[in-house]
Image 1: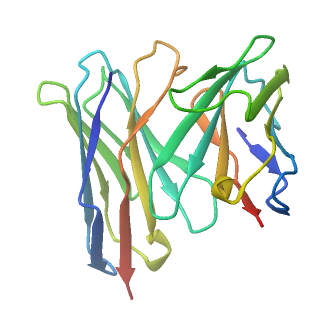
Image 2: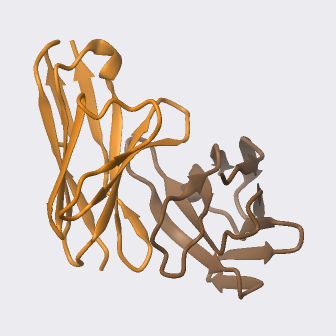
Length: 114
Length: 112
């Protein structure tokens, strides 16, 4: 089955700096890679996703890059703000329609210091 | 769009009783819903996949007779924790499959 590794487990940055979280996956058949943000006591929220036919996707301060050959994908947050502090999870799954079981990374706790 | 609700958000029950948690997709239909359990500072652990109109598929090690799942409609799935024990205390999260996978806000279960 799929195995997803996520690094780092904790990340602390100064407000305004960039944050990068990396994930690697094992199953070359995986073709959909979402990122979730989970605040304390809440459910995860989808913040950005990328499909295997795309190398990069950007949404305002958030971007995701995908390297299919190396089987890794990364979340980039620029101009970080204190409200970006949360746990971030990457996931990988194989599906033509986004349906199917996601394999999650272990999460990265991001702290943005004001 | 793509809002998933869970009810209740918090529940405290006595050991031996059963608790039902509801998961609803509010503005889309979800043929597939997933139930997760999350321990403090850990990732999401998939418990079961719930498909509308059919039996749920449970992950290895998850007792199907203890965690009863019903997916009676395209917008509602329920998880019933039967004969709850303190070790069942956890954060339970559902997700519904739409254009992506959308999570509910979670239910904090405490069994005393």
